[in-house]
Every structure is written in C-alpha cells, then in structure tokens.
Amino acid sequence: QVQLVESGGGSVQAGGSLRLSCVASGYTYSAFCMGWLRQAPGKKREEVASIFIGGGTTYYADSVKGRFTISQDNDKNTLYLQMNSLKPEDTAVYYCAADEASIVSCWSSLYTYNNWGQGTQVTVSS
Image (tube, rainbow, N blue to C red; front, side, top):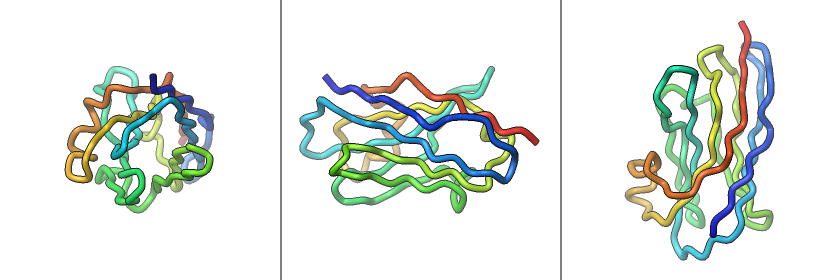
C-alpha cells in the first residue's frame, strides 16, 4: 500500500517562497509518476505539476510555469515542490499524488491517480 506524507505548508506573503515535501513509501511500481494538485476553498481540485519518476520529465500547469519547480530525491523517496513568487491565488490545500503511469500519461492522468496524501495548507497573503 502506497503511503504519501506531505509537509512544508504554511503562511507567506505574496512574492515569498515555500517548499513542499512528500515522502513516499510502499510502492512497487516499475514505472510511475508523482505529482501535486491543489484545491482552493469552493473550487475544483486542479493539477499543478507532475514528474515521471526515474526519467525526470516534468509537467506544469500554465498558472505555475516559471514559478514552481517539481523535483525528486530517489535516495530519500521524496518529492518536492519549490514554490517561488507566490501569489494570493496560490492559496490552497496542496496534495501529493502517485500512481503507475507512463511518460505519456504522467500529466494527463494526474487527476485520477489512486494514491493521495493528506494535504498541506498553503496560504499566501497580499
């Protein structure tokens, strides 16, 4: 059973930075992807970024390109999301997700991944 535990959320002023972490355990996939999604109050959960584990290919939502960076540390089984130049509209609960996926479906299937963390709150004030 895959377990994902996020950390690193918090409150920051606009223009600031935060780094989210997600420690993964229990997976046995030979090819899989991990990613981040977020959900703001009253809004639908949306994809933020994903990465094909092993190959390193990354994908981003247009709203975060150039500001957010997704990365992995295989030795630590940890996924990161470095968030710079944060805006109030980035305020949301951020979720880590993982599932078996090909490099082709790594982004397109992010919303339907089967394994999720508990979420971590990010609040950006103006």
